[in-house]
Image (cartoon, rainbow, N blue to C red):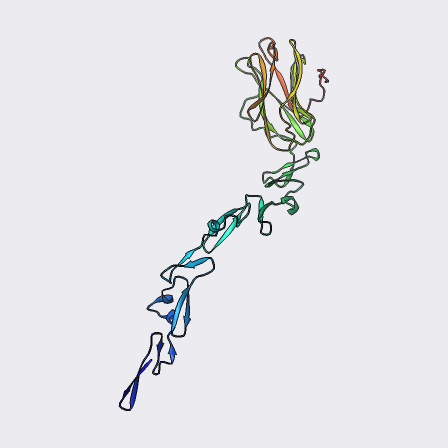
Length: 310
């Protein structure tokens, strides 16, 4: 500050950052309307006779002493999130885990969320790494609802909204559900084929049973030790074989059975697991009509055929 004497008065010349008759008042540059926030991009700190800019946590000051730049913590510290994925965000970072996992800050790793401990399912809940699956007690007449969490009662009757014209519709009780028996007239004799999805934890049980109308020929697809077992018998041959991986894991499995010209192909998830030779047609037409009964998840109430017992 400098002082200039005058007639019965004086004039003070203030240094930058000060004002007033005697330069006794600090100028708050951070509140100057002509220079908003003192020209700082983030924080303006007023000081006696001056001011300076500063940055929020996670940012660094650029060389112009006014603008701030985000710090990419993920590139500076590659292992900052451990086994999780590091995601940089303005001024900070986040450690992300796959769906079904949560981040443990102490161990710096992703840990499975046990959704079953949070009562996610109405009945049975099976937790697995990264997810969970709800199940309902089919033996007591329940099935999983569309929300995949709650259970609903299995309907006694099936809705007859079939697009294909049928001659005979037979509904019979089987376990907690029903067996649907349809009889179709096909334009020409065709080989037997079927494809369906199923899931189970049982290691033994019938998946599909098909037989001729006179019970002289039949095909059985079942589980034995958790693997697919095939039994077949007709006028040409009688065979039993087991193959493929264990599939009683509670997950959906697509199984297909196709009668080829000289063999029967069994596929799981469209991959062949068995190819069984057969010398002739599996089912023999009678008077130009091929009639085959097919049952899922069990036998009819009375099976005339004698099954092979390994």
